[in-house]
Structure formats: C-alpha cells, structure tokens
Amino acid sequence: MVNLIIFGAPGSGKGTYASRLKDILNVAVIATGDIFREMIKEDTPLGRKVKSYVEKGLLVPDDITLDVLKENMAKIPRGRGFILDGYPRTVEQAKALDKIAKINAIIHLVVPDWIIIERLSSRRICKNCGAIYNLLFLKPKNDMICDHCGGPLYQRPDDTPEVIQQRIKVYEMQTRSLLEYYREKRIPFVEVKCEKLETPPEVIVQEILKGLKSLGLA
Ligand code: AMP
Image (cartoon, rainbow, N blue to C red):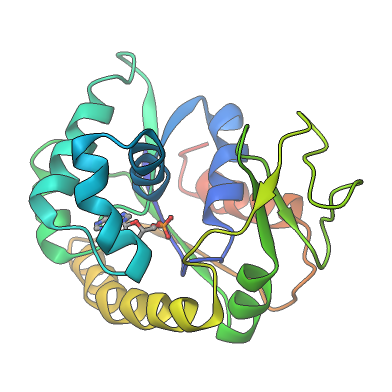
C-alpha cells in the first residue's frame, strides 16, 4: 500500500499521470479540483458556495476542503493507498493531512510556464464522461465531440490565459513552502521534468514508476 501526493502546476499533466498510475499501483486517486467541479455541476448547496472561488482560480477555504478530503478518503477500501492530486495546497492543509494519513513519497512534476499556458488554453473536456482532449496534439476525431461517448466538449471556465496566469501564480506561491515542508520532514521526492510540449504521457509515467521503484514503493 502506498500513499502519494502529486505536485505540479495546473496543466502539468497531474490528472493524466495520476489516472494512469491508479491502475498500475492499485491506488485511489483523490483530485479535489475534480470533486469541486462535480459539486458545482450538481449544483449542491456546497457546490454553490465553492463555485465563486473555483471560477476565479482562488483557493476554496481550508475547512470546506478538509471536509471534502475526509469524506473521499473514507470511501477508499481498506488496504488500498491513494494519490492526492490538488491537495494539499497550503501548509495548514498538509498539517491537517498528517493527522489522517502517512505519506510515503511526493511526486513533483517540473514544467515550464509556457508549456502550461499552451496546454491549458487548448484543453477541452467531455461534458459527459470527463475525457480530456487537446486541440494541439490530442484532437477529437470529430470537431468538439467526444470520441468515447459522443458527448459535447467544453473549455473549463478557468482554462483561459488570464485565469491560467493567476493559477500558476497561486500554485508557485503556495507550493514553495509545501515542498519545503515535506523536504524538512524527509519525505522522499520523485522529481520529473517535462521540457517538451509533446512528450507522451507514457514516458512521464515510466519515469515516475522508475523513481518509485528506486524507493521500493512500486
Ligand atoms: P485543479 O483542478 O486542481 O486545478 O483545481 C481547480 C480549483 O479547485 C482550484 O483553482 C481551487 O479553486 C479549487 N481547489 C482544488 N483543490 C483545492 C485545495 N486543496 N484547496 C483549495 N482549493 C482547491
């Protein structure tokens, strides 16, 4: 059983890699951003509350986020580990996490800003099944229609250049102290650099697995 956190700027590919690692490592993936978007889509009372934060690229308050995390962790079958994607975003959140789980390693994705902006502004998502496309290098066969389920593709309201800049700024500011926090706690790091826009996800996933294997975690 392995418990991991994946860090990487929005658009660094965290979600894609986590979902591929999920089956290989037999872990659950908890992606707080996805959970919030689902709540907003379902228009739950809490969804209405988080909407204003998510749409501006601001952090949802810690108390709401921690409740959502706990609720989703409780659903993981016993003996199965997890990959956290999007949590923690603050040192306070990391400390709260320490009280509920032991983290075995940090996966840190290092991706230059220009790649993030290119990738995110051309990202499209299926409204129906959540499949992710990219108009630059992972185009749907039919314009704006999902290859898998025929659902309509949409652009996340926070995937616009202005909001992306804001999200990168928030990410860098918050993550610096988080990475320091885990380094001080001597949690092992698997650091993977992506310097090309078109590097296939398999290549990055293999690099992550190589790092985890060297730590005896895969
Ligand atoms: P993401 O999909 O990880 O880019 O997250 C999208 C948005 O969800 C963020 O811009 C925040 O508004 C919110 N969010 C996701 N995770 C957290 C978290 N751990 N703490 C606070 N807000 C979060």
